Image 1 (cartoon, helix red, strand yellow):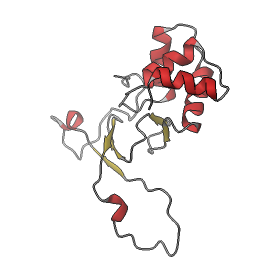
Image 2: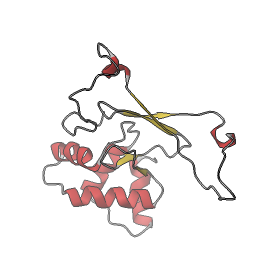
Image 3: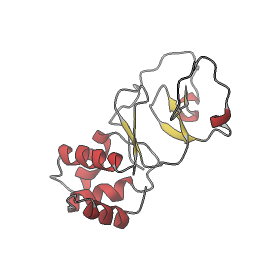
Image 4: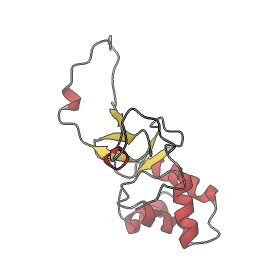
Length: 158
């Protein structure tokens, strides 16, 4: 994702309104590697700028995604996550705490795939699921846990 100053200019160039609320969201998403939900981003933005609306957060994220500045991710964890890293990469998700991290798979584009039957693939995504090191410490991997994935109370932006 480009810098907040570059995003401000790009929004203006595209005829989109630039507000202090949007500029705050640009700063919060810039180089953010935690893949926040809109609700988590709203909570952080509200702490810094009381009165910002959830609608502004959603609209700004939608505009950024439409401009190709971030990706909207459905990782099967409930809420949509947003990723400002638009480089070619994949994701790993913790089944217990919902932590999402970027992973890079060497040679993924050249992997042999059976069953495409002439389907023209434009994009591929690999999703790894498991238990992160933090959740695995002191826990039997097979035992259930009371931690729910993507618990908004536990999710933070940095």
